[in-house]
Figure 1: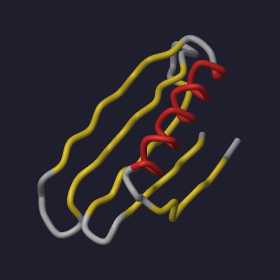
Figure 2: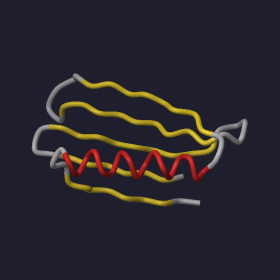
Figure 3: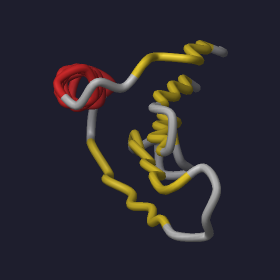
Length: 77
């Protein structure tokens, strides 16, 4: 499993990558305001870990472009 979290002073964006019971890879995203109940989440099912890594790289670039700071990066096996 891999977890990443980015933040600005008011917002957060979190990503979790894990393998489900069918051995597919899932990229789960959550985002919203730090001090509000507003936010959302989505899941994307992928067939390989390499596909999941490509999605994560795209997310990293997007977060940096929007001035988010990476505050957590955890890789668990």
